Length: 283
Image 1 (spheres, rainbow, N blue to C red):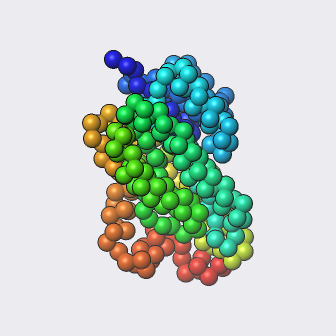
Image 2: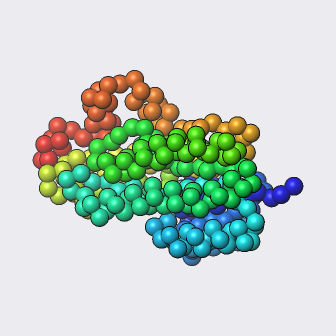
Image 3: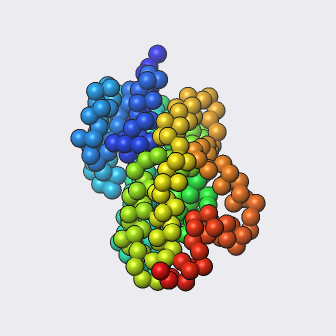
């Protein structure tokens, strides 16, 4: 029986690291990719092959895929997990940062998918796993560019699923809720820098606190939950097209389907602690 081969991006911490270890434990030959190779020493010690990869650098992605095929002869699972959250008011966020958000969260995932698909088509099997977010179905204040990338990846996944189904390839979307990773800290820090002063400062302070405050941290789910879900999906004979998992994911997506746009706006302002004073931009 041929050992299946998986590539996991964004594997230096959090969901990516947990997924690489989970798939390795299930018998996969696992390649873990990230920009910071030095942070993947524990993965290497566990028998995972670590790769230096920047998903905004086409050459590094091509080199990684070439190495995988040369060494393992195939690729069965691609987990597009690399990503980050760029928050800030639309008025404040430089377009250079907006483009960077799409380069990492969307175009990097799509380019790796393009590189993997010829090999999956040749073997008439494979699974593409795209990590989006409950944020690919809902919206939050000051998160336009982040949500834009996740909405985009959801749509791309749907179209891709229809295209590759005749070749025996599955496309699965994972929609995490609140997860205990570095994501919230990075997103909140960016938000404070970009919109922490000026007209949107009140909203920015409230939103940043809701993202990485103590109360939020206590409710977040462990990355292992997402890793277990990914392992379940890639092992299934007929995986679901979507898995919403982690704190708040299913309730929030369901609530969005029930409420009107303005009703959901009001709910999110309340849930994130953005008061009338914050809306007015006052301290």
